[in-house]
Image (tube, rainbow, N blue to C red):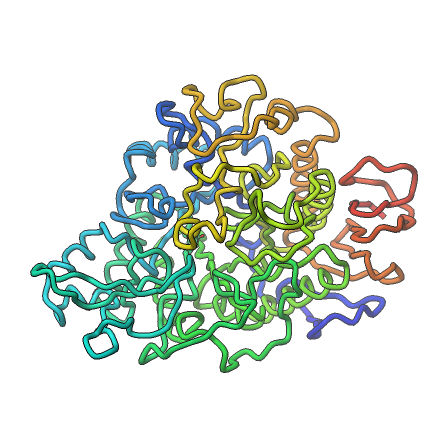
Length: 581
Ligand code: NOJ
């Protein structure tokens, strides 16, 4: 296959950006993958207002009806839940609040019976402080092999009273906490890039690497199709742990990170400003090792990197042929609703990933960011991970956000590659802005004394039935975060079969994507439109998205699906359409 690709976007009449020169029909190249956040999906055990594995299994048919190809489960492992399960105390067991290993096996069986694939989360950068490995390290003397599993260091200052360096925790405050020795004297410090309950593992230690090979095999043996790898840019820290001062717009997870600003496209790949705890070269050796573990298994298994790395050309290193298969495209997620920027990012994505034979991924929402049905109408800056709440400036107008979100998803699901959806976006759910302070649970909220709201607003349990207690989330009527009183119209049963609903829009898009095989196609840019319009052809489908305010005339052709009802042949602002031209 010939490639005609160029760096950057210049909008020539027939420039074609081909998805991949590497032939391959592995399912993950084009799959639409639905993220389930277990605590907020469905409460099948029905007793505590927390979702669980039984609830997921019961509700799987709704996802088949929606038309996705795979599900990714956020962590359900044994955990004190200090960071909603991203603080793992046993990587090979299910937390009782979510069920049992037998419940997991039943879920895995049902997922595969239904013809879906199953991806689980892997959290290798840190464990919980309650993990036996850390407890053993605490009980062992300084310099012991047990302490070498984590990042223990002596403090600075006359008596070691200062942290070993100036690194900040992603969730606020210092990234170091100091131990108290059994005799009451102050001891060593340990590194936690996230909460103090999440000590960073020492990935220079071969023992740690061996443990994680076993963990991968444990879940692969149970039948999972792959892993979403948490903080995949963070496992290796720069030698000597040098001090670092982040630029003012540094996002919390490590990208440029200020939603609403231009994402980076052409920045230096190896500039001097790479934080010493992110995107160090040493991580790649680990993923080559894991690649070979996955190859021990039949079928096409997948690793997807959660790596907040920019620019895209650098992120592509995570998906070189012998490393991971996918990486979340956060540059795309952070792209504002603007024609020129979206074209540039789509082009840069296809160029970067095609260059290493990998598919691009596309994602708009997840459990760490403001839901895109609100985000796309925000008028104030909002650094990634900070969240929004009652006191945030620039409260998004709900109708505008939803309209843009529907258009943005119509555009996204026509792109070649693999797309990730976050539970509830198919219902058009907005961010819950007005959560009461006392309900908030994100460690960011606590570590910043309420200065940053954190991510609870996108994690509220989703509505299934308009008239049931907790909107059908679970029979107890409880919900671990309060659901808004006005969510009945968003409930799945309010939208099912209703023409024009967001749910039916998603179903049409997913069916159309599958029929036209858009996931394995390529982008051919169309020109002659105003700057605010993103227009391209993917195979037999012409896609036109109007991010502006002025209507544009549509070309001849049958309308396959539109994000809003159209009046004649004109495409209004904040609307997108698929045509068979
Ligand atoms: C990224 C996860 O998506 C987020 O929810 C979590 O808090 C951090 N990694 C730490 O594990």
